[in-house]
Image (cartoon, rainbow, N blue to C red):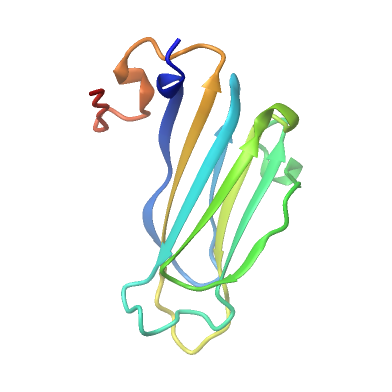
Length: 148
């Protein structure tokens, strides 16, 4: 097995505008993977204007199912994050529940209501079963894998 090919990548949260006080959340199924790397990028269109004085909160919780009310915190929330930043989680999923729930929550205070743009990628690695082909190394039909 070539370990560098024993992973899958997915865009967990597609680039989308999230208004103040709203939440963008996704469940990440870690079945069969020993590790997860989750990267969250934050920005807004007018970088000079902070859409919320209290920044953005990024939460990572875990659950045995996809029901958000069953998710429990296992790592402290990242709060007050300003734009142009990346939040990165490296998770040993062997000690975690099956589903990780990632939430991006813009703050509610501030003079402007410009939306926050968030994007998140999840890489599941050291999988029990290697992908059968390069097509199964990514989640979507518009993605591509090039091995050189």
